[in-house]
Amino acid sequence: MKATAPKPVILETKRLYLSELSPEVYTYLFTACSDSEIMNYLGLKTDAELAEEKDKYNKGLTTYFHTFKNFRLLHKTDGTVLGKCGYHTWIVTHRRAEVGYALIGDEHKQKGYMTEALGPILAYGFEEMGLRRIEAYIAEYNIPSKKLLERFGFQQEGVAREHYVVDGVNEESVSLSLIRPEYDQLKSAWNLKYKVR
Image (tube, rainbow, N blue to C red):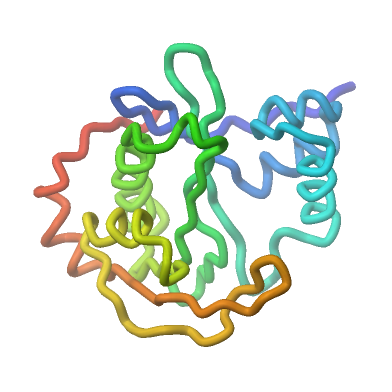
């Protein structure tokens, strides 16, 4: 008998469904679904991407210290997986998490999808997950990402030296954050239009 699929939280915006990717969803995917079902659900394009996701799952996506909550960006018209946005390195005890996001394919960029998704996901983090601090680390040259975060009130705190390895090279990351009191002051100006399903 096939395991029962967990019911993910869905955030609905004008053009998108933001479908929760929790540890429970990943466990269901990698224990009860075929490779093609996994690839379709996560929007994976190649066997190498599938192998990478399986490797991450097999090595343990969570620990006693931290967990995650991501969301798939699904286009309302046809269900196309456009990318992911959400929280990794969610340290529940300290009520903080690092936000991350990525679109799948250049054809989805510069259409406002991530701007549409990020506001509701930040609101969900503060209001439903109980976060007090949301962190972001971006490459210094990633100007679009910096502008996106600043649009939602993130403030630069500094530079983390040799923070990420990209293509075998240690790169610095700009550290930014948004804390709950700032969110409370800014959220009305964001003009958020979404609902939780």
